[in-house]
Image 1 (cartoon, chains in turn brown, green):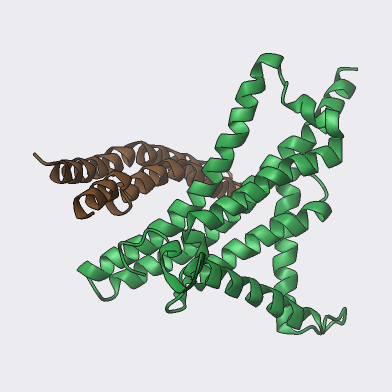
Image 2 (cartoon, one colour):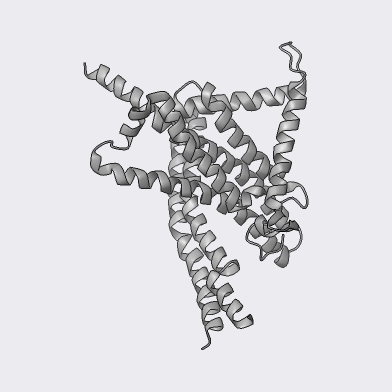
Amino acid sequence: MDPISLIGMASIITAGLTIGIGAIGPALGEGRAVAQALSSIAQQPDEQNTITRTLFVGLAMIESTAIYCFVVSMILLFANPFWNHVIEQAGG
Amino acid sequence: MDIRDISPDAVVYWQWGPFSLNATIVFTWAVMALLVIGSWLITRRVTSDVKISRWQNLLEMIVSFMRKEIREASQQDPGIYLTFIGSLFLFIGTCNLLTIVPWYEAPTASLSTTAALAICVFIAVPVYGIRQRGFFGYLKLYFQPSIFMFPFNIMGELSRTLALAVRLFGNIMSGSKIVSILLLIVPFLFPVVMQALGLLTGMIQAYIFGILAIVYIASATRAHQQQQTNVQQTK
C-alpha cells in the first residue's frame, strides 16, 4: 500500500475514533452536572442565579475536553501535516 | 470561508511581499474600530441626568454587570480589574456576536487571536500579583504548599494558558465548521438554528474567558488576604 492511501485511511479512521470516544466522557460528565444542578435548584430556588452561573462555567470546562478531541480530529481531516508532506513529495 | 480552511488565517485578501492581509487581521481591526468608535460616540454625551439616552443606558448596564461579576468572582474591589477583564469580555463577545453578519469571519475562530488573548492573561496574572503582594510575595506563591510543588505550579500556569486558548478557538471554530458542513447536507433552516445556537455559545465563551481570567488573577492576589484571616481566626 502506498503512503498516500495509508496516511489518508489512518487519518480518517483516527479522526472518527477521536471524536467518537472523546465525546463519551464529557457527555456523561455534563449529564451528571446538569442533573445535580437541577436537583439543587429544585431544593433551593432562591440560589438559582448562583447555581446557573457556576453550572455554565463548569459545563464549559467539561465541554473543553470534548472540544480538544474535536480540534484534533479537525486537524487530522483538514490540516494534516503528514498528508501535506506526502502530497508535496508526490507532486514535487 | 471554504470548508478546507481550518481558520480565517487561511483567507488572504491582499498580499505584498512577506506581508499578507488575512481575514483575521481585517475583522479584528473592524471589531476594534466598532468598539472604540461606538463607545466614543456614546460617551460624548454622557449625562448624570434622570433622563438618559438609550445607548448610555446600554453601556451602563454592561459596565455594571461586569463590575458585579468581577466583584463576586474575585471578592475584591473591581476597579483595577475592570479595564482588563472588561476589554477581554467585550472584544470576544462582539467578535462572536457579529457572526450573524454575512461574509463576516469571527477572528476568535483563529488560534492566533485566542493565543494572543491567553498570553495577555498569562502576563496579567504576575503583573496584578506583584502589584498586590510585592515581588517576593508573589514568587512565594510558586512554592506553596511546599518547595516540591514548584515544577507543578509552573506546569499548571502554562497548561491553563494553553487550555484557555484552545477552548475558545475550538468552540468558535467548531460552530462555524458545523454550519458550513450542514450547508452541504441540508441547505435551509437547520444551519440557521445552529447559527443561533452559536450566538449563545459565543456569548457564554466570552463570559467564561472573562471569569476564568479574573479567577486566575484573584488566585494570585487573594491568597495573602486569606492567610491573614486564617491567622486572625486561629488567634
